[in-house]
Length: 240
Image (cartoon, rainbow, N blue to C red; front, side, top):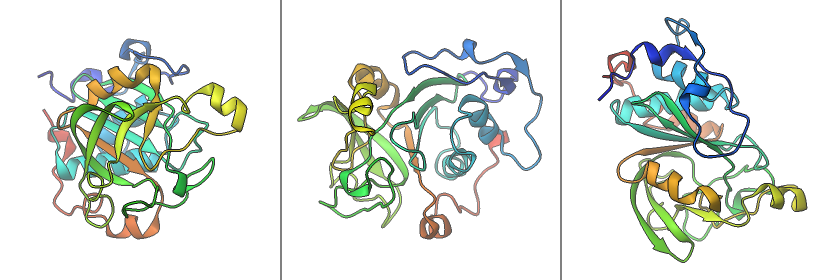
């Protein structure tokens, strides 16, 4: 495996401007930044460079959660539900290769809000999205076509994800055309649905024991989450 924090990890990237696959790291990296700022974990610094349009808090907490759960993970998706559905708010990172693979639109659940998600749930049949850290499982073909099962890793926050059939799948209501017609994306029953055109490559990039982190500034979750408040998380500088 390529060392995670080699010199390439500190190359500064330019922001992605198109919703298309693939997004190649070479189009981002242009300068050398030898070290992250004081108080910023190396992985957080890497994510900030690759996804400058994401909330810094979303990326910081994603880095903390991953360091707690699996500091040697290879792929990570971050969903920033603090952004409206009309904006790209899903990023998929190849941590081993220091690349941003996708920057995409993603839906939220019908019960979570209209153009913006504001409420979240772990309860079956709530039709709300869930936040927190998930581990990806297997891909399969279901009623929504090619899909990716998710295992929620946070008790009472998202650990009913499998029971609720919260999966990543493609949907025709996730598109710029739908936004133009309605002022927002269509909404799911709680699943993070993506554009149909990227369903296969995006799912294939994340299936089988990778991670998804869904962020929203929910105060109770921020205060109590065991993965973002992990007291013994290893230093990300030691990743290799």
